[in-house]
Amino acid sequence: MVVCDVIRLVVLPMPEPREKISISLPTSSVRFVEQYRTAYSVATRSEVIDIAVRSLFERELERAYAESVSEEEQFRAFESTSADGIEDDPAW
Image (cartoon, rainbow, N blue to C red; front, side, top):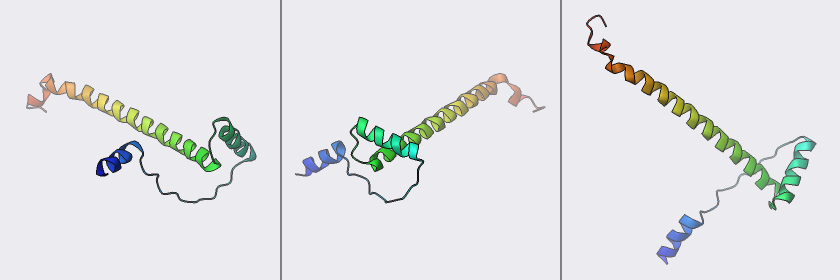
């Protein structure tokens, strides 16, 4: 029974707690949410909004990752100058 519970946790994670909010959207956005819900067989408008928010979250993670990689590349480029011998020069 314990093995089944562990497998269930790995395969079927428990749903996150939900919090109710109220939002106002332009009519065109609501129309799009409904069209998306129908086209992709999404159960509720809330799920469509959740999909959109998760997409924004993923985009931000990708942006942050790209930024950190860029900073790391800049650091590596700077680090390569540490072997130029300047630090051993008494003038520095």
